Length: 83
Image (cartoon, rainbow, N blue to C red):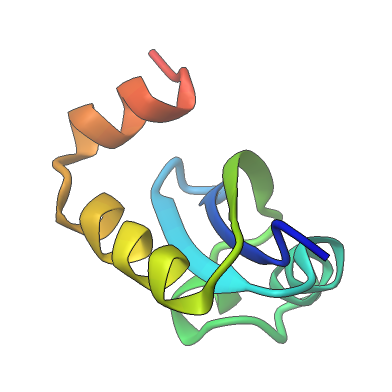
């Protein structure tokens, strides 16, 4: 199945943005929302999915995740359509 590897950006309750990688977007967002996701998002629930991109390979998705994490807050906000 193509597009199994997903890079996503969440907006946390405090307005911060979190970028991650998964193979099951719906499950992963639910984990973050329930406080069982990444340590960063645990104290910042609820979270809202703001953006995602699908890739055919894990390496492509991980490379893109790294690229997004290097962006400034303003660049990430622009990417996901905030502000």
